[in-house]
Length: 180
Image (cartoon, rainbow, N blue to C red):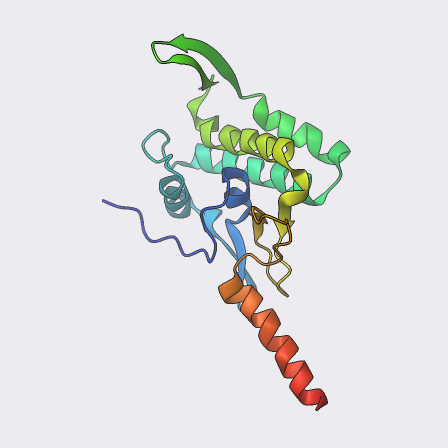
């Protein structure tokens, strides 16, 4: 049996931001994909984690904790966020190994139910190492989605040009036509 279709307007962002994007606005009402284990199953499948992790209440609770920690990290102060993110990261580690193919690093968890949450928190560390200024919240009015700006000049403003970008352009056009 396959998981239901992902209802979110933006998917495919790095894991940490994709976790933040499990909350979005639809017609002014905040939706939450992680309001139950069915949505969790959708999120795990969409991120290639379904085979390794059960969509159960424990994983869901840990993912919500990680989502809140990452939200505070993106929107709050580092002083406030560090203990929250560190609390999630305390449940796993990277194990360095030498394999027949060469050096490898693998995540290890004392409790597998922390796996998805830990992976998202670890991904957040990778994002802020690569370019913290490229972690953005959509500029579209009422949009609460996040993205990692991979544009060459780093000026992306909207989660989606087709949706929020188009709305902004249409709004500006309407305002200009009203002035004339």
